[in-house]
Amino acid sequence: MDSFDFGAIAQAMPFLLKGLAFSLQLTASSFLGGLVLGVALALVRHLRVPVLAPLATGYVTLMRAIPLIMVLFWFFFLAPMLIMWVTGAPRPVPIGPVYTAFITFAMFEAAYYAEIIRAGLNAVPKGQYEACRALSMSTAKSYWLVILPQVLRSVSPILLTQTIILFQDTALVYVLSITDLLGAASKIAQRDSRLVELYLTVAAMYLVICAAASQVVAYIRKRNTRAAHA
Image (tube, rainbow, N blue to C red; front, side):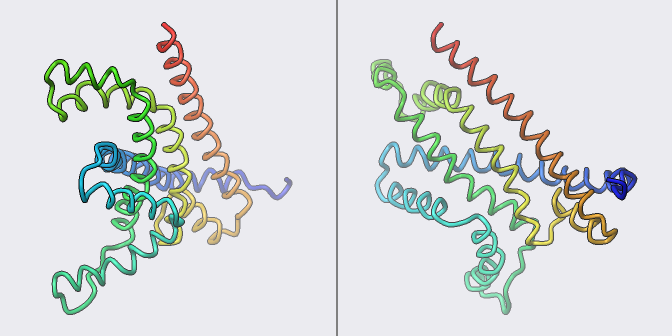
């Protein structure tokens, strides 16, 4: 500990916070995009929409069966070639690491959110669906006004837990040379030869954020339990 340099941490903190801001932006964007796409996938499967339901099932199965880092590499290297083929461009159209990260994370998380939402849809009492039909509500109106609000409220702790995992997974964008929290720490640590200080600091930051988020999840779960027994 005699050689532990707290000054190096203080000097690196502005750059680390910049990396943290990107990690949080990626988490928020992936949560919103993944949730919207996940709800759509879950509804398509729950309603057994012809043609689309098998496609949605295949998409969810594929995304949940392969590592996220492989999806990142696939999108980063293959998407430019696919765009070239579709548009007839003379050479691959680069997407860039940042767009790759935002799009890939949303697509990947959508598969997990879809399964969570679908489980919530299956848990809704049949009486809720029958009540909507008795009121002559359309399918879209029934799900939008009655079913989905109940589902999102009941599965919110699981959704937030998955989002905590998502925040941790944002460290994978380091392989694309993006300056997220881990990437910022790695760059400074290697430049200043302060690997222990910087990596311990980043680990502590992840610990504090994830622990705080877990407490929020626990509070929401208790609140939902009390509401269910009220």
